[in-house]
Length: 249
Ligand SMILES: [Fe+2]
Image (tube, rainbow, N blue to C red; front, side, top):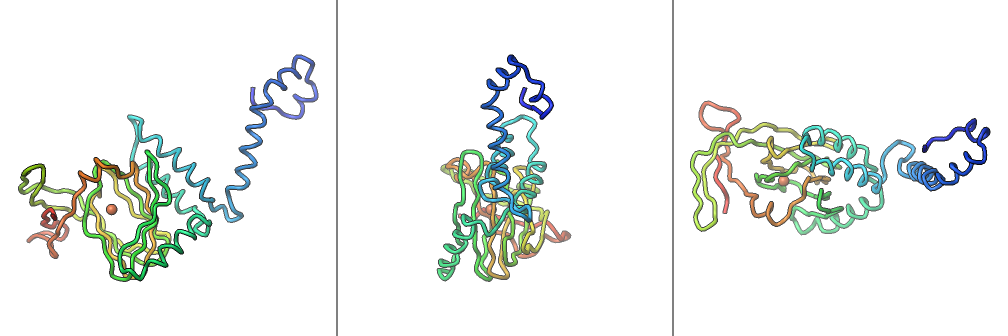
């Protein structure tokens, strides 16, 4: 009995009043949530950082369910991320830190959140900086372009040509199908799942800042399973989207 209206209060008898008193903690909780909600959304409906994290956590927790659908999940967190208030102090302070380190000339990372279910990271690229093709074993990923311009290409394993395991190390030759090729600008999203578009590469054409969410996040096992590829510059003969690739050391 959580919901009360004015009429129910007016006709409340002594036993009813006792019921209301017993329910006061839940009434207070409802009021608290309502007040918190007022503080979570700005006038333009963008979400504050804490509200955003809470909403993503709620969705990410569903990864443990048998019926979890990665593409549905990505659609939901993409909407949440596009609603994120990027001038929130947590984000703007992280942006300032990576900007100050830009002169080092490396792709720069800054963890905004990391827990057992997901991780949110801010990345900054200088002009022409790139991340070579790599995979994300068992992971779902979403990237929001917060500023700048960057080319994102995703690949799927099309065929294993040859593969060897020597002393725990894997070498091999593969054919990868390029399943996505897009230029991301402010507000654009790129995604991958554990089964589709799982290999990607990024190269910035402007100074670019990205916010990515990986679900689940990297841990030691997933880091050890991940690998880097060296792709031919041109597709194999007779194809426009299939590239030969070798594992990088
Ligand atoms: Fe990646």
